[in-house]
Length: 154
Image 1 (spheres, one colour):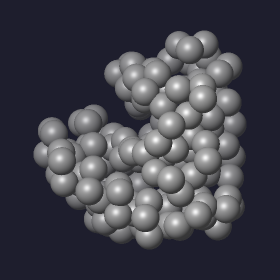
Image 2 (cartoon, one colour):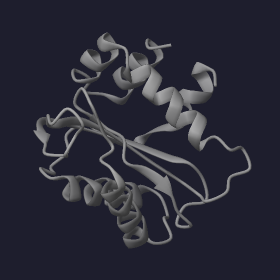
Image 3 (tube, helix red, strand yellow):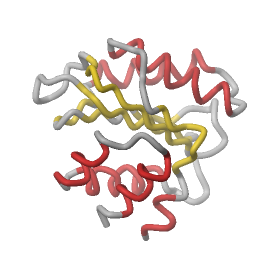
C-alpha cells in the first residue's frame, strides 16, 4: 500500500481534534456517533456492540498512548477510518497500562472487493511505530497537519 492510497482512507469529517470521552466505552460511542452524523451508517448500535465485543477479546490499546478499535460489520458498505485525540487521556486497559491519547477507529464490511482492511491496519500500525510520528500526532490541531504527519511516517 503506497502513501497516497493509505492517506485516501482518512477523511476530514472523521477527524476529531478533541474527544470528550474519558472511558473506553464512551470513546467508542462518541466516535461511532460522530461518524454517523457525517455518514449514513446502517446501525450504529450494531457497530458499537461489535467494537465492544472486540475489546473483550483483548484490548486494542496497543501502547504508546494509542488505541485502534476495529472490526467488520454489515453496517458499513466500505472501509471507514476515524481519528480522535484526547489530551487528557482515556483509561483503556492498554497493554502498557497507560492512558490512550489517540484513537484510530476502523470499521469495514465483512467482505470487501478491494480487501484493504487488513493491509490498511498493518500499515497503520507500522507508521505508528515511528516515535516522531506519534509525538507529532499529539500536537496536531488540524486535519492537514494530521495527514502531513502520517505521510512523514512512510
